[in-house]
Length: 90
Image 1: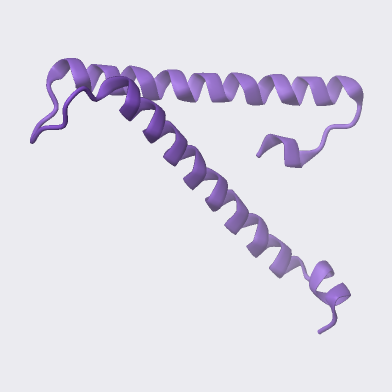
Image 2: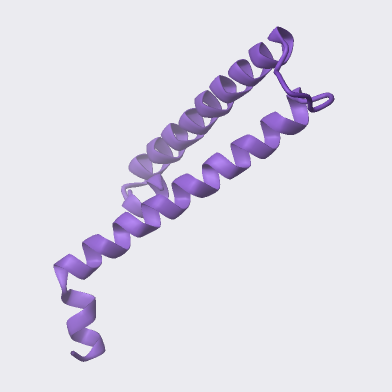
């Protein structure tokens, strides 16, 4: 199959998109883990104390809220310019 055939193969395109989404999700989880670990973890131990656990929960919720807010703003900006692109939502 030539490169043009690969570019137009819908199954291959779908597979690539799914794998790209998985990669972006893994990057987001890694970034969130790193940020929240640095913010909340004072000294690692065998168990999380309640303060640390609450900190992690709040950190993850704020991270998700902030990411969603930024994503929505980017979508609004792109739509208002009339050039919305699905690649910006990733």
